[in-house]
Length: 259
Image 1: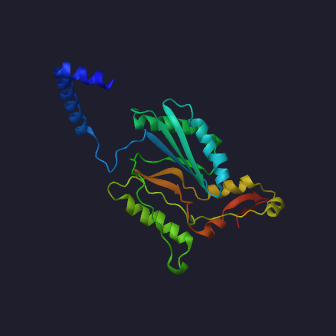
Image 2: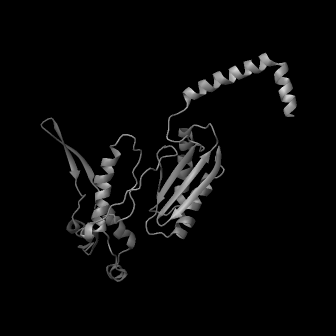
Image 3: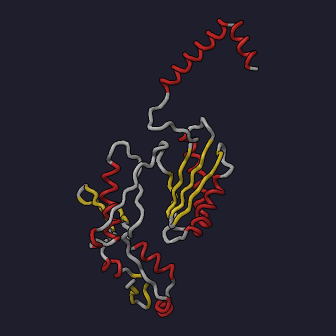
């Protein structure tokens, strides 16, 4: 076979030279269009889905979060492979599409399928699409800690969320900063079943009252001397005392409060 190739090349020198010249010209044209990167992107167009589910073990994340999203993504037009990784409170899915597809159309397709999967996820699960990035997307893992344990994990997480993350996002070229670990600042209403029974209340009533206690509403406007004055109900507060004074229900004219 190799001898036939050599004989054909010797008999058709002009054809071989013309073909080599065409390949050379085409290679030079393709070279000018190649993107500049640390490494060439050899991956298919991939959409990454990250879902945080606080308090769930890896087995629960796999069953309650990862599996429903995988099922909704499998069989989608253009999808070649779906990979996943489940950890403590975190699920990461990689949806790979066929070569040559538009990554933004792929993200739109994934977002539409994700809306269907949300109904089957736990209430606190919040899946998000990671930004479009290259093969070198995740370049740095940064850890912060308190010297001698003087700062609580709650304050360390607050510092990471509202100071460090905001500053890192202002750096050109940084697509996303994901904060994990520590404690998220929150107020918890610890419900006593005995007190609910004694006051004739339900858990739904307590939950609704706690939700509305942190919601600002509007009361329209008042007209005075050809001017409009907005009427607002400012209920949002960071004070634990104000939250405890929230009225859950009225029983015989007596307000039952969260406290």
